[in-house]
Image 1 (cartoon, each protein chain N blue to C red):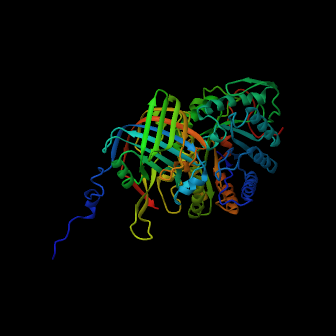
Image 2: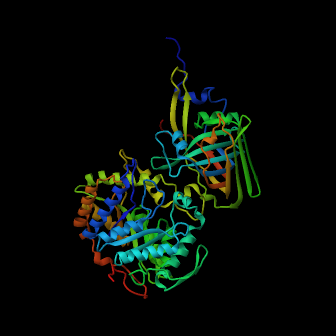
Length: 244
Length: 381
């Protein structure tokens, strides 16, 4: 009888070049992260248009926008900017990632494949000077968001909350007429220890009607809160929640 | 121990043109029946913008209609959102006094500050300041009721001397309460000598410490009103049927629907970091309850101490509240019309006929410990 191959399914994920050359296995420890977090009210229609049927919108509909810089990670320093839709999965508060941008290719691959972030490559800035924090997100040289926090004052770190993130994890299909081979909702549970936090007046401009990073689709109607904090955090193994 | 009902006036989608009309009129019929059956109080909340969860933004109108349909039951106006951006304190005092007159002195006056961004954001009210706003209004309103003329120079409102009219029928004024969803507020209720109006769906064990703290602190209180209203009110769901199985089926629908609607509101602490809202209150407790166990069809929402079951089960569950020192239980009897009205009314009948007799109402008369004035009992002028 001819010899059989020995690559079992259990050995596949990180023995395969699909994953192993680009990023190490989760969890990723991310100490000393700096995060600007803005929460704003938006319109119900785009929120419903971008929520999977198993999720429901809050009242009022809102968006959580974060711009984070991670000075240490298994793939080196990287930044991640995300626009999340505040939503509910049954009884529970969740933040569905609508769109994300990162600035490092290894992070991009892992964020997409492991955690299901709808992530694209771009440029991110995050600067804090005195009581003012500014951030910008650009894709393909086009600025899509400019955020700021001003009149900052210290606030108890424990009051800053990071909700579990939901992502639509997908693998595009090669078959004619079939869009996806894999489509599932996965949850990334936060594990964040906030060391220092400032709260202030938030401002956000979604500057461009970009086709590759359409952040303008969730317009700012009313700024709710703005926080800048230093956090020791982790990207854990994503948790499978439900088929799409 | 006394029992009452509470209405949030939840209106589930899909809505039709008479959805709200149906909910309001079903609720009024329930209040009328509660009065006939010997329930002690009927409360109506004040909420704004909370689609589906509560369409009860003008509770004084609902309560006025309830007053005209009933003779004996006390009417709980609560909580009134006692924040100047929502309600000028003078308007709170005026409306409450008018209700007390209309109802022949049956008003209970609940105060509070709202726990949702949905509401506070809607009125552009700063969440950091709501506790101080509430406290200022709470100190002012009893004076408006008892003084011939009133003036005020405060942090959040001020006014020159005016007679605030009308005056309530109950003398010196209706009993005061505050909505309590955190341990801190239970203590603050005690410090101010006002009733502790539990608004989170907890278990007796979760309430126990709050009750003890409240009883301890109120002994040395500085009353904001003319008398001390030492009472603890708990809240839970109620559905009584012949068998536990049947009651659980409908009770689960009730608790699940209520909790599901509540989960879609936006709590302050989830979007606005502030030390002024350390606990997420009601929303947290319902989510926590739902997350404890998940059963097909929405299980996991039935918790210890809920008045859901056969009459025997409900008696046993409500005794748990009595044992930890709760004076009154307010019962949520429907939400979004998830239980057909005829079943709700039948459940109320069963409760009155088979549960109420197990509790000695005489043993829990309203406690009024101030040397100030009269006993707070339903008072005909």
